Image (cartoon, rainbow, N blue to C red; front, side, top):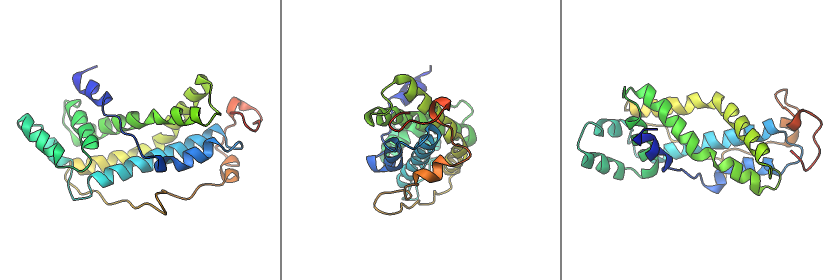
Length: 210
């Protein structure tokens, strides 16, 4: 592990509690499958990170300034980081740039996306354990794997946004719906009867267990 990766481990983003509303609701809904819960968590994670990025760059700033500062004196990088509203997220960008030898925006964007996902993914098992339905570590690990698989279909959008900012393009402001909610909760039946739903353990679900 190089120095940039070690630095990235210390940049742990914590999405606010309201960003996890769908996940919290899914975790305490007995009829939800593992896949349904993972879908809610992946949606919350994706939307939360994109809102975080939008907020950090809402003044028209772009990550291109961070990329350009890597070629200057360290003091210049500190000044650039301090000019952003969300300095923690920009430090993740700085670390991703340092960890990418080619300094190509596309490669940096992929690296930064991975760092952002890793920085918030740890919240999922914490929420799962607190729900009282995922007290077993093996079940929490299975949920984590399911969330990662679900997020793969959403990863490209986040990466594209980061790459555009690294190329100097402004990020379009994302809007929340309602009082801090990213989207209305999904009814359990809509997910349970989805053709992609997979029952936990491969058999019939027992209410209160996962």
